[in-house]
Length: 615
Image (cartoon, rainbow, N blue to C red):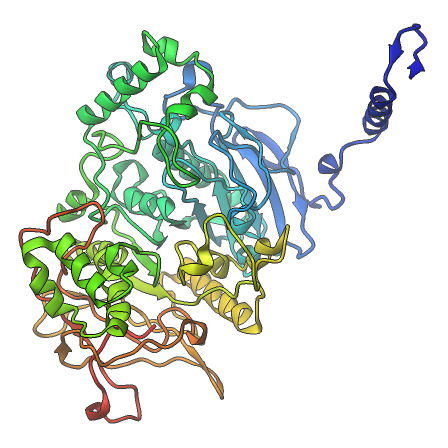
């Protein structure tokens, strides 16, 4: 034991800690030191002056800029408010906390380190091209994260915007409120709202961030009249919602959605009265007598009742966005059907293996047939005629195909066809089939290596952020193929942000909307190149006569798959039967499901057999 000057006895461990703290206090924390300030800083925005830092690549970064007032106290469950102006210079040199949410297990596939979490979270980040300067009018790419509207953060390493900005863009990401704190509707909230609406605070945060970009991005070298919003999963659903919302009109000019949309038949968001009832259930579960009391309850108590199964099931009450009459005057499909959407060029796609139900997991022919009868009831025979299988191996091929086409793919096609019917802007589709090269014997809580091209597996290719997966341990063995594919995918994203057409010399994309003879409307899935002995090629296949899915085709092994939708061009089928794990009975009508098939150039069409889509 040691003795302090005051004569009190203190453990040596406490003295050691005190000594360390005194050293830390004597020198600034590393996160607060900016070794490479931006020479032209500070720059002026509508709330004050701000400074950032230069990254090793030359990209200029501004992290943690507030775009709305902290939604604390009486501002909990209110639409975002204006930032209070500051004097002096705001040092935007570190990422802000994520909006409060449950934390991730350390052995999850998508664990990239701890982030601070707080209700004070409405901040955005900017990565500006090295040659960006005021008036440069560079295209702006805005990222909206996914997470089922209950999770997510703009600070995740997988979402880093440096590599996209390096290609001549301004990349912006931001936090928005999630879960109960981002989506709660309640009769008292509706009564106090000037719009007589409640819920959708996370979507209103997204609109507020776009309004901030409209006002300020020119200062950083961006073009406020050339903004592309992009998102994945719930972020992709947000893209479709923003295309439908009158609040977002004129705030963006293109949409790029990676997996899911509000056209997906699985997702039915409640109308305001039903959402308010859920809000009353939340109030009861919290034991609060009023909205005012609910605003006093600590956030972790609210998180404890929030139902979510993404990180392990917990909670009892699910709170989602709603059809509130303000942010969303109607359902997104209805808004498109009425021709009231924000008519912008759109890219939307999905991964080949992200959809799962009993059809996909069937181990043999018997299980496949049983799954079809469970999901489709008295239409099962019709389904089995459209997706035939006569052996166990054929069932293992047809099951994943049917699951994909009946789940994520049909939602994407519904969106494309809705735009084709009432809009003028082009719509492009893609499918991602590359399976990430996992390290041998690596183990995860969520086992993505057992899925294939899993949900979100395309994101690190779009942003060039593969190295984030090896940040704490070696989980991937990235190859030259993966790096080259990522570069080409980033190039298509940047081309789309710049011109509204994702085609590049290395990766031509077919035009988005076509209306061939004998079809009312049609949407192409673009062809990306596959690697050959001569290097990268891009093949486009002409349309041929429609055929049913056959059973002769076999899949190319996933590890050999090329880029997004390698070597296959598809046209949309008329809506197939929708196999959904949430639906025990089929739709009332289901037209026959056809697909366009054709032979590759240089080969006889007679030698081409109809079969399942090749991945």
